[in-house]
Length: 84
Image (tube, rainbow, N blue to C red; front, top):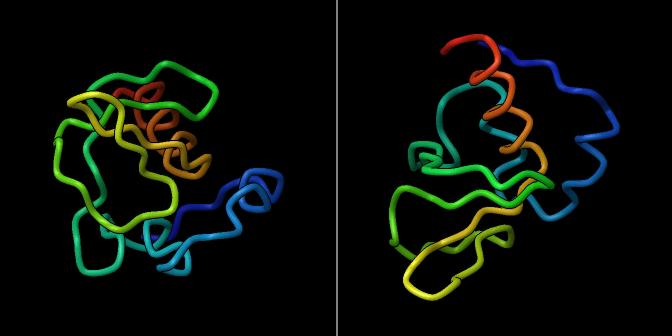
């Protein structure tokens, strides 16, 4: 599976340690892509897990973990709009 995203979205992600692995599989490095519990918009999503992992786009906020990755947001919105 290869997912094409707009170049404008890809260019916003300049710190991906996994070379955009999420675009060719449902993995981010050796882990599954983080599950999103709630999307606030503007590339801010609350993760379903509170596990802290090394990711330059993951931010601790209280007892929650937030994802600020524009590519992850694009994938989430695309899947939500397509009923997946």
